[in-house]
Image 1: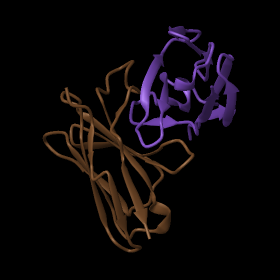
Image 2 (image 1 turned 90 degrees about the vertical axis):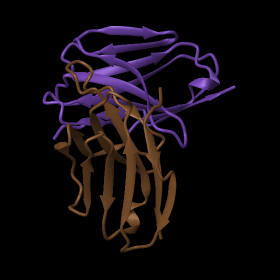
Image 3 (image 1 turned 180 degrees about the vertical axis):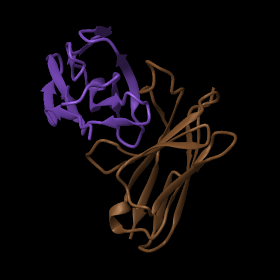
Length: 115
Length: 111
């Protein structure tokens, strides 16, 4: 079975541009979460989506937005890019069931560099 | 705001040594996970602990959840170079609307 897939794997943007990152969850997983990981730090929670609805949002500005599609894939959009947005963006899928809600399965991430 | 702290931040040991890393919070979590992350890859789930006082073993790794479900430890026996990586603890909120991560412990096992 395919794991979580993310695209693109690497991208370079300039300040002020917009970026869209894509994620396909594991088959059967209806929850997708997005995280930002700066080098040397733990992942920071951005969004959680379940059944196409936003269930949780981290402490990120409104420049960050996301959505989940009927096939449970998801997009993360970041507008007006800043240098500080340079990071590894991780997508994780889960079953979101009691007792295993924290069991996330991650993709390999999208490495964003903002120049 | 739920926060997780981990210690130590960095750990460099010789192959064959034992080590323990800690994860602490002032909040209670419905469950707590440990992940390991290697450079350029996403974190990989190692274990989930749910019940206060629970102990789980995964080969040379022993995980313990505190009685109050606010802290956890990971003990590695006879560390090997393949254990090198970033060890992350994570906690799920009671409403399951988020999973937050600690800052991680970077482990280097020297042959």
